[in-house]
Length: 150
Image (cartoon, rainbow, N blue to C red; front, top):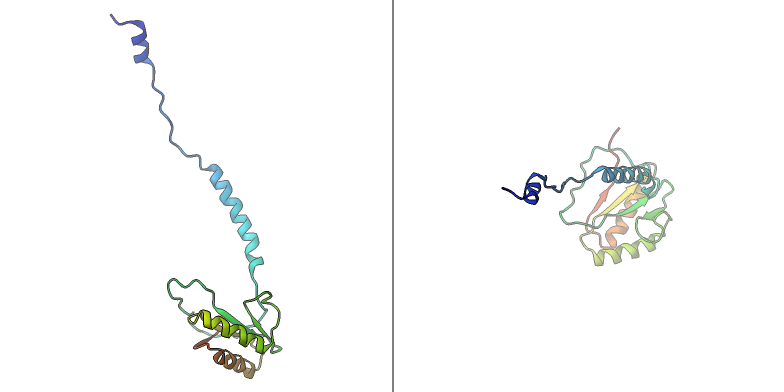
């Protein structure tokens, strides 16, 4: 005959731990982050308002491991120059100041890509002067920025 305590132990169901993850809080966090990024993404656009010319051009391939953004010299419709680095990239800069900054950057990072963004209303002479200034600052190759045709 079995003792009463042994019999009770055999009939008892053993509790198993449930190994389920409750993902509802994670979904809530992801939705909040999505809303935050959707609101802030349009605000992050910085730069000079330039109406780039339309052209069917292929994008420039970036080399693997390249982390620095390209250096962009913008020329607006009034012929003012802007550089996308420094304290205030939306403030016009003198041509001599641009030359000094670009030559210092090219000494530190000789493989950095350099682009010129010329407004479609700016005279071609201004864009060529910007390219010549970049070349004299030690830039081996200069790319021209365009907008894809509509």
